[in-house]
Length: 171
Image 1 (cartoon, helix red, strand yellow):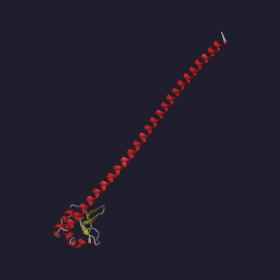
Image 2 (cartoon, rainbow, N blue to C red):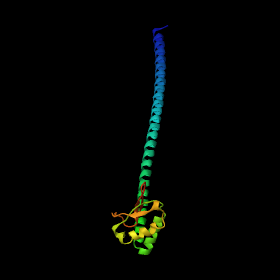
Image 3 (cartoon, helix red, strand yellow):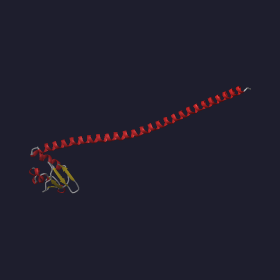
Image 4 (spheres, one colour):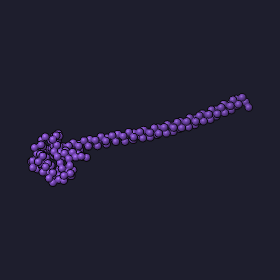
């Protein structure tokens, strides 16, 4: 063989080897790129799921806080309405005639089957008298008699009964 042919054969073999190496390198790079892409995709998916869980927890807490706040506001509104109703009821009761007012107080006292001391407001001292209590006591057993306290309490009307084991606020 001539030197030219040998050189050409070596160069052809070298070119083939270079092409094979380049092809193998390209395949290896493509595999590495695919592997990195897959790893990144998994990492992003895991991070996304972790963020979803974290956000769901925060959402639950925030919704719970909003519910508590709403219920608190609702309770405040209900309490304001109840307080207003009681104020109006007290106004209505205190505006009753002495006869009607004493009739209501007498019914409340008759419903209590216990002895005790009744405290009233200074305003009611002309309505609810010792004579009134004595008249109520006539229909009560000796063990369930009532007495009128000498001390007044700051209430708008009604009474507070202090028994041995309990207290009833009918103000």
